[in-house]
Length: 556
Image 1: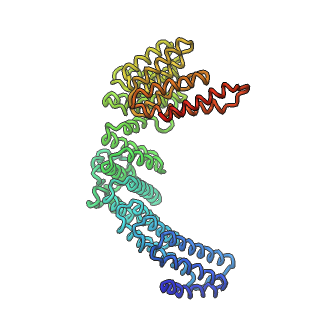
Image 2: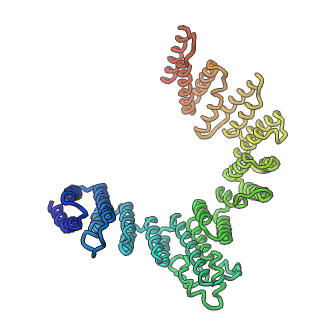
Image 3: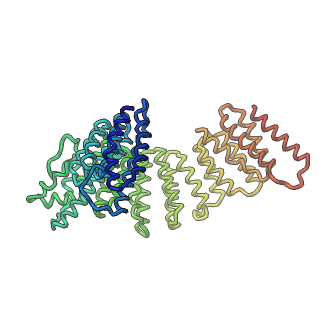
């Protein structure tokens, strides 16, 4: 309690000043003292809680807001600063410091402290807090980003760059740090462009293609490079490099994104993952840069992507889709579809991987589902069929082709008999694939109308249940497919009972049996609760017997 009493004594001067300025009454001050005493008592407990500190800080923030509003409302004239003008804010800082002594490992507490200090305009304090936080948490990207952002806001981009480079040396695998670094470099280019426009400095038209090899190593010959930063350019040394005969060339290289290209290359070397490329692409496309610069940076990103991830399906998809960027229409859209289709087909044939086949299948099916011209749809379906003939058997390609034939069969001038023969041929190629079997069953359901066709459909479903192998979810999809094929409630009940007996023959079908049993009980419940007129007592007895039978199956 000595600590509480000490804090009470420290409050007296500021509270007296608030009363002297007529901002608070004596009654209100007593209430403040009582409330603070409660908070202080909670903080000196043997096991203090973070929530106690945060509640105390929130209370002090509320007091400070109230003080400022009363000054504004009462039109109190400006006087020389006194203790109460800064005491409430200072107390917030003190509570944060006391909290951090107990919870140094809490990154959220550090960020809250930094945000409060920034809100109060305490620039030097923010710098000290971030420095301490980074010493304790050197592997926390969020702290580097906050610190760099603070330096940029206070017109110190060199310090911001140093902070991010330091963070990248210790956390080279953090995508968010690379994103922030690229964003900062884009901002630096935009700032230089505006500055040079004001000063009347023009950049050269020279593209500088013969110096692109220098950029990949992190040096664009624009000034001194910090070799301790693993190839990251110190682009703050630009002003010293724009003088002399090479100045115009250097300015042109900067405006063409030489620095950003270097950062992109280093980032992709550190993290050769598709997630990084997608993140950088989003940053570059969303930043308000000149169109020619944006196109050059995106093109460079695609080049690096093709070099680093030549066999990755997502990377192949991202690269191929560049031909369709920008909302193209008319002949541009036709040409873009052709280029994308050809690039994806080449990658699929070269690699022969199922994930690449799936990417191509999704591309064809997605575009056939849009409002493109019928001839374009037929072109894509024809390309898919030609790839099926040349590539190894792929469930993605085959199932997609079946679905497209069913959907656009009339456009493709395919009669039902040919489509069903194609479906059966495909299930022979990959007899264990649930996706191909499900596509075939849907095709036969669409084109089967008479009783004979329905019999063939049920036979195909039974064969699918026998042949399909894979994950439990894939197998269950096949078994669940025809549960609602019965036209009446009685027929659906019989289908469920037949499948439950069938699923009990193999112990590996335990998951299937549980799914069927759950569906069977639900079906019986619907039949029992459905309001039907003129229900006889015999029918009620039959329903009860079915319930008993369902319970017996559950016991089994």
